[in-house]
Length: 250
Image (cartoon, rainbow, N blue to C red; front, side, top):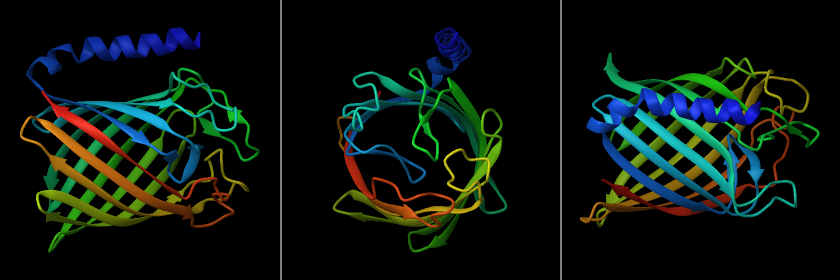
């Protein structure tokens, strides 16, 4: 049943986006990361490969992203196959001086058990879905502030929000982005230790991007994340993680 759901969702998206692909700008990439950390939660404390595909046409985007576990997180994960595939559809515009993005994300878990409960046992589910809005405001001199709000309307039925402050700068044609963020999560989140809502994780990060004339681009990222409230997010196995990637614009 779960495999039929997964294959059916992929087929439906493929058919619906066929005409979009023909006129869209297409880029593909792959990253090798030292861990898979999602919203402060350690989903794998070892090596992962994360391929992606972006289709962009004017203000619309369709983004496909996946995670393949190379390490097995102390024998708790299947390796060398997709543990997660995300399909993100979004629309961006400008409103009252803000860059605004509206979107919806479908999370697919081909091998189940991607979310972690407070007792460490995987929650078996084939997928879930969120809708979101992101608001970004430039502050001048390379600084910007971004507010993100997500609502899971499928399995979790609760919200998650993040506030981030970033700075962009260029050194020898290398784009360097540094930032800090703080997040909150609702009590519906399965991984909260006490069922409380409140501050979830914080993160400090720096990323690098360099575009080559051939159409290829190189990137790197390093981050430090921690629990902002251990009653909401228990201490995790991974605090420092990072990786490198390559992207090609067709």
